[in-house]
Each structure stands twice: as structure tokens, then as C-alpha cells.
Amino acid sequence: MKLAQYAAAASLVALIVLCLAWELWLAPLRPGGSLIALKALPLALPLTGILIGRRYTYQWASMLILAYFAEGVVRAWGERGAAQALAGAEIVLSLAFFVAALAYARLTR
Image (cartoon, rainbow, N blue to C red):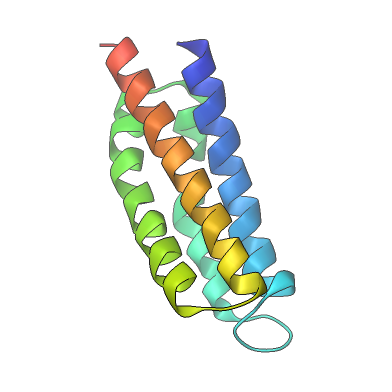
């Protein structure tokens, strides 16, 4: 159970950092960064509940993360270069969080 909690927390924090770095420095849509970096804000909402281990937070955050998975798939398909690699990382991190969150929710049933 603790392993699932740590995996979910680590992948969520990594996804927040990835979203910010991607849109501000690594491969922004506009030079100098863009307001799309605000997409990291919804990920910060469940962070406290994930770190504490609230089962309900894991349940609704697992649905939230699917939007980031979908964005990663779309951008991996349509982008080239660094943005495509970053989209692949977003897919991996969102899947890791989804699996860990489902495992934690199931184990704490």
C-alpha cells in the first residue's frame, strides 16, 4: 500500500514539474514560455490529499489524470522533436499515476 502511495505521489510531482518545464523552458509553444504552463495547476489540487493518503482523492485524481494522458497522446502524434519526447514522458507519468492510484484505492478498500 505504501509503495502505491509513494509511486502515485512521485509520478504526480514529476508530472507537475514536467508540465511546467515543458511549457516554460524546454519546448514552449511560444518563445519565452506560454500560459499553457497553467495546465499544471489542476495537478496541484490533489497533491495534498495524495501525500496524506486520502482514498477519495486518489479516486477522483485518477479521473483527472486521464486528461493529461489524452493530451500526451495527441501531442505525441502531432508534434516533432523535443515536444514529442516530452509528450511521451507525459504519457508514461500519467499512466504510472493512474495505475498507482487505482492500486492504492483498491488496497485501502
